[in-house]
Amino acid sequence: MILNLSTFRLQWGQNIYGWIQADSMIKKIDDLPKVITINSLDKEDRSLFPEGFFDLYEVYSYRNASQILATTCSNDFNELTNTLMKFQIAPEDIIVGGGNKSKIAKGVEDLFHPLGWRETRVTADLLINRITYTDPSKRGGKAPKKIERYKIDSFVDGHKIDFVKNRIAFDMEWNSKDQTFDRDLYALRSFYECNIISAGILLTRSAELIPAFNELQKRSAKEMSKGKFGASTTWMGKLRYRIEAGRGGGCPILAIGFRPALIKNFENWKDANPIRRTTNDISASDIATEAENDIED
Image 1 (cartoon, one colour):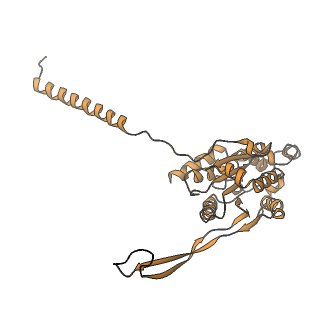
Image 2: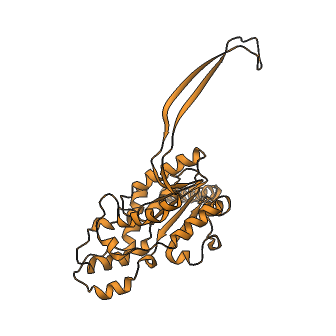
């Protein structure tokens, strides 16, 4: 075998150079600062809620919302959580259409309106003072100045929030397009930044309801529209990733989700309503995938 020495030297040199480059890249990667994930989700504290609350509701607290509500707004927060403990959902209320407002939304209103929780909207104009000091040779408070005033109308013009009492804003989304959460978070953020509230609460559906919805779809006398529980409607997962992306600004937010235990006499209802049709079931993974796609978009 004839060895071409110049070719050997060239290949060997290229290999050595490649190894040096690779080693250099590894060192550069090692030198990079570690990425620390920032998450405003709080550690769960069940002691702040009535006994049995977590059996009925899924709960996520952000930016110390539950602590703030339980300490600085304790009377109203206790009233709210104890009132939610009384709430129940009839299977028929899920099945039937509600037009602009479902029976479930009306049921929540019937509980909270008598207690003084009211729909509220906040608006504000921005007043601007432009101060020009007219004599450069003089300083201090007595220096001559010219003041011009400007106003921006409706600088803050938040959407309505369903239930507000004192320092708590509470909104519910049972079955809306998931983009509604953006509107709700903007409204809570506006209230908070105007120092109208100490924290906000959003109530929606837990993904744990999906098996129950599939059963209702199969057994109901009147076929349910899939739009009632589609992946692009208001589910807890759709809300959580928006909060974690910071769309609520600095507002402390408590996210609460309806769990299946709230459905009244559901097992009895299933016994009385045999399966009538086969359907393409929706799964929790479908909703999770949809949320991930939204994040990527």
